[in-house]
Length: 406
Image (cartoon, rainbow, N blue to C red):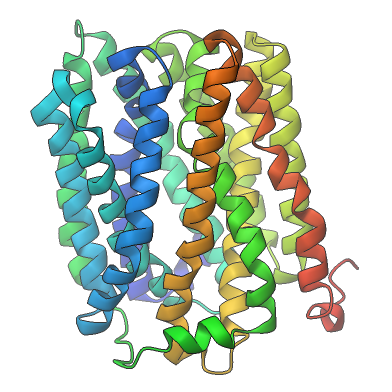
């Protein structure tokens, strides 16, 4: 892993450091933000509406953030993303007990922060890596994020358990804000590349690469899962089985320790021709381990899920991201059009997130509150498995020369 890291450019190393600091700030609060919001009303409706609001905000804001990146630079939008993530946590600190009345404000602030950050992040990955080393880079980045994940949750769990009421949450949120500020100043070392002032938005809509055109339905399906399962279902299911903030923090720390070793192996042996196979293994593993915890919500099941989930999630997310980036690069003019591709990507993904939340809210009316969590926890990940054949047919022809499944 160290040799892979050494091979990266200085700018790429600073980019990784910047994101590692940002990720640590996120994991300090990320695991417990869902629990914090849940405690405000003790149902899952508030979590669902929060996810719905930021999903809508992304669809509205992403194009505007892309326009801003074109007028300034992708790194400037990324830095503004750090600023609005900071504002999001300040909103939680300012309103604290009355936050349930300001969920739309919180959701739209989160959506704007994500839009600003991810416009810069996607373009940085495209500009600072190539298709040949992108899988390795993404796994190295995930490893750095995981190292932060080892210490963050247990530290937050200890802090929260030392205070009565919600005070511990506020202390953790302040810590997150500090790391966002540090990430902002570290980002000043990363310049990135300028992008063309001309927009190719409608050209990409009408004449995208062959692979990209077929990835629309995949990105839509991915959004259905990420809008609910990846946003709060995992946290709430593990919180329920683990029992308490400290137990949840210790559990997440143990799970991340297991993940570090597996990420090292994936980074060392990753290859573009194995992306689909890695995705398939990861998606099936997520589904089966989720069903196990839903049927048998006991410590042994949670331990198995803790071993499988971090690795499997990373396999799915990294492989999917790499395929999306490669689909963009299939366009002969991708360097000029890359921002437009990134903006358009959020349309099917965002609509998928909204549909996923609406499905969950419908289920909220049809199922008892105790049944809702295990049923939805096992239902949503099956979508990852369903899209495996679609990915196979999308990439089979373009990978024939590389003999994908040899």
